Amino acid sequence: MRPLTHAPLAPQSRAKLSIPGRVPTAPPRALPFPDALRAAAAAAAVSLSLLTGDAAGAAVPQPTEVCRDGGAAVEEEVRAEAVTNEQLVEEAWEVVYESFLPDAGTRSWSPEMWMQRKQDILQGTIKSRSRAHDIIRKMLGSLGDPYTRFLSPSEFSKMSKYDMTGIGLNLREIPDDNGSFKLMVLGLLLDGPAYSAGVRQGDELLSVNGIDVRGKSAFDASSMLQGPKETFVTIKVKHGDCGPVESMKVQRQLIARTPVFYRLEKRENEDSSVGYIRIKEFNSVAKKDLVSALKHLQNSGASYFVLDLRDNLGGLVQAGIETAKLFLNKGDTVIYTAGRDRQVQNTIVAESGPLVATPLMLLVNNRTASASEIVASALHDNCKAVLVGERTFGKGLIQSVFELHDGSGIVVTVGKYVTPNHKDINGNGIEPDYNRLPDLTEARDYLSRCRIQELS
Image 1: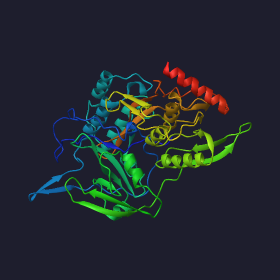
Image 2: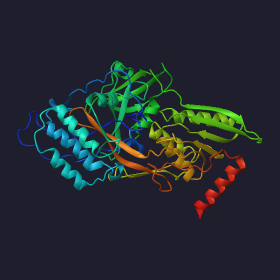
Image 3: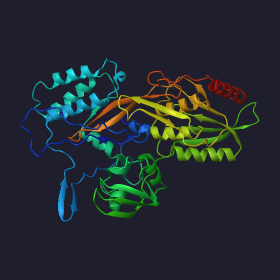
Image 4: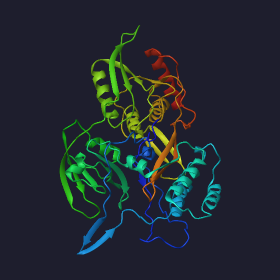
């Protein structure tokens, strides 16, 4: 999988350091980080699988925000430039100390052991920024977790420019004062449609085509922004924390390609028709296109469905979660997320009934991974699908991306996925029910027995 594959989310920023404009002469001390990073977009939001690639173009530097209240100007610095090399290393150390999942690495880990690690690292002066970055790399490498790693400023910049909206921006959920959250523009493509229309980094997205998006996830809002190339979407944004509200019409530029391919088939020795659907990856249009495929096949006479997730390495975790919900009953568990931080611990359930209730066979193999395994386990454990094929890959760790104060960042494993039947996906995968495609009668019998066992 690509480095940004969890899934799925936007890079998150550490609480801002209270560092004055000059370099302090006192020795570095423990930095005050009151808040562990908030997990992005629904449970998945804690996952790198919410990002699947890099957008072209350059990020627009975030401006200094000037608010005027009663004629008085208040200037807020966006980034603390005076962070020392020692403080930068300690900041990275602190992220691991607060959030790292102990059983993610191949080596034993505990907060006490990590505390000793800090003392060893910060014994002397760190003379250069490149040396600080090298120390962070080695520090993270000592965890024995291939997914926890350092991102250079250029690598982090590419991530924050990722565009899944079609208008050249990347959204991030920020907690507000009302216990909910608002959607802020984190990344913006220079000369992209949104930038050309007047959107700037740090703006708040208020509505899309007249629909209020406050309280919606970044994934949902991004899906609302999407549409065919060269069509228009009307957005309302608030410029900065204290700027004016502006409505603007933006022409869409790009749209993610459909990963959904389907056809109606007849199987040997069966009178009924089967709707075959293959999903190559879970991108931002996967759910929408799957809904269209299901409806078209059902209207064409499909009596049941075969959903093919073989060689699907994942993609956007939230897209996988939303896909699973299409087949589940209201209240069914999609997935559990577990981690040290309570914000990572979550139970994700379906909010409404299934779109289709016909039997489902789900094809998997050893390259079915991440978001695909969430779909497979959710449908299997809730007796909605028969799994056919090979044991899945077993990628069930959750990563979050943390921005450091010099523009670099670190990816840290903060949690893991646990199936509705409380099985750990990571390293184990999911065992199929059949190694061959059963006939419709077999599948129905299996699912009936499964539901009886679930009720007993």
